[in-house]
Image 1 (cartoon, rainbow, N blue to C red):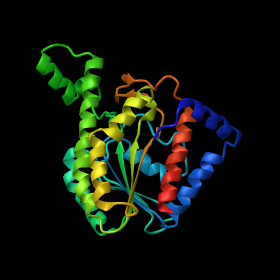
Image 2 (cartoon, rainbow, N blue to C red):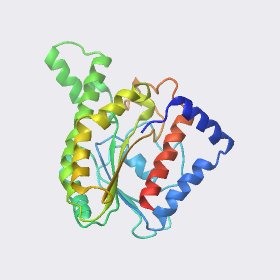
Image 3 (tube, rainbow, N blue to C red):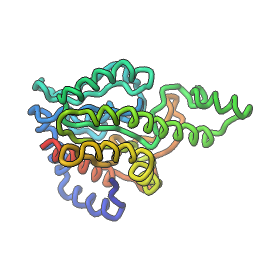
Length: 281
């Protein structure tokens, strides 16, 4: 799930010496997608990085593919090959809880009918992008202030905000578990922890949270019901686009972690592309 800094630096130096290798690695994955070999259904909370993932899987690789400003997805998104090859797509639904009841039902039908071969569930250690102009305009801030009856610091708000985001990860995987168990044919799944550039200093805790905590109990349940080789699962992490964690008004809530750089980012993106290509192939 994580490649440590010393290894990342070594790989990064190698990537610099062969600067086109990452692009070639992505091209291999893109070949599968554009030839109709992959169909990927993406789940996850709103603001966790699903749209950015969809773009990375369908367009020419571009490190600047994502803006730091979040635009809420309001309908189902389908990312296909630019040449219009049929059956090759990445399907991304809205992740807000009030939209899941509407749009996710269609995806459950796809899963039941086994028209998809891959599932990616995106989590982000609670760093769900902001929709409100300022953090002081969010429901979390208002509830905290009502509860304490005093001004809430940015740090206090962020602690509660991230906690709620991690709780939403559990709500989603709990909902997905029976749906995934009921899939008729073989499939693979990736749990992708995004926003790596924001939580890199906490990577030991993040790794333990997803691979040993409550989230993992649901993955274990799916695995026990389906068993290999009918089900393959991998934990991966990445920064799909390096940005400070900001509000639409420009308030910096969390900067990119000190010591996190493009070498680390590229190393994990390359592993992501390679894993999905191997699963799909």
